[in-house]
Image 1: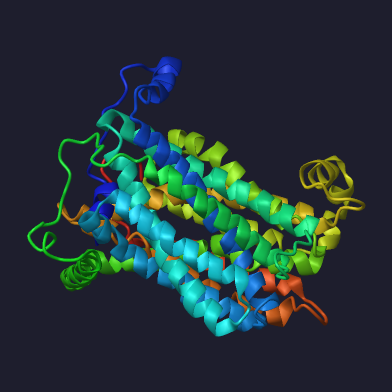
Image 2: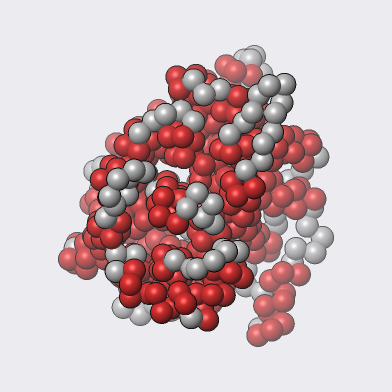
Length: 499
């Protein structure tokens, strides 16, 4: 795992508490940003642009693969869940070391340049092999370069006093980007622009890729204004420059990737000999089932919504409910539950998340009164902008996402805290480097979503959507049930926390 990423997720690092208490202390958390250097604010803007472009692409990917490239539900699901998403995870693990070798600014430019070329290919071609090899795969590399670099930039361009609130803002901006992407996703599809560029007429999904490409291009001037050597920290880890001086730019990248892979293999060999590693591995596997439910909102839910609710269904705005609730709830839940053990909060959050998915498996007739009532009418006509009658699935989806988000607010922030609790003293960063595992497990699991769509929610033919959601609900239930059944093996005492 790269030093840049370790620096970000290292749980032993603490930030001094603010001097004030109550309202004064709360306001003080934000006023520490007064006088922050411009690079920190540019990092916030870069985060918004990168994540919005990524989220628009993520929501569009499976629909584009099926509609424009002709892949079946099964093939599209497998490509996204077993190729695109895991490739991003693997490349992300290597990206931090590249940042250490060539610097934040160059890594930003490299990632954005790769994404720009890849998105351009995805916009103009419908040849499957070309779109996948020159579009989807390079895009995974470019996107992966952005994740650890943004985290490292946030740390590097903030002072110790600014760091805690800076990372909170980064998390908030990520959710704002997700909300913006949902609205863009619906707007482009619903208006169905008929654009002709020199005889080229992009489909709705190619138009969405054009929007993400525009966000990508805007990043170039923003990154340009990052000053070389502008750092708020006195000590910054650097790789040895002995080979850098003589080597070419590409040689440095290759050498860094090779060295990072060697270090990752060495770390893995070191960890497998420790009992705590297997506890953490099992813990992350269970969390992966919850992450799969979160990921299906981009990889399964759009097809479900379009097929059940119509081609112009506002599935983007629906999915944005998750981000809205998370923004509001995470600080509150975090403040109210900070004295309770992380493991306990993860179990409670997992139970709430699993229960939420069962809402979608219930008969739609049960929710018709709610759809015709005040809440359903406000949701459909005011928030979603739906014309005519409100389908019960709109109400069911909203309730499911609200309840799921409550559970996510309980468990998600505490997952990585518990990883640190399991780690032997002095190895918190090494165990923290495994933090991508739940998402990797979730991505592999959600790759089966295409088969569920084909079986229970096909584009043509009879549908049994309740069975699909029941399958998701049962899969989500594996997380809390497993954490409870294997509690004596996985759980370790947490200092200063109520059991």
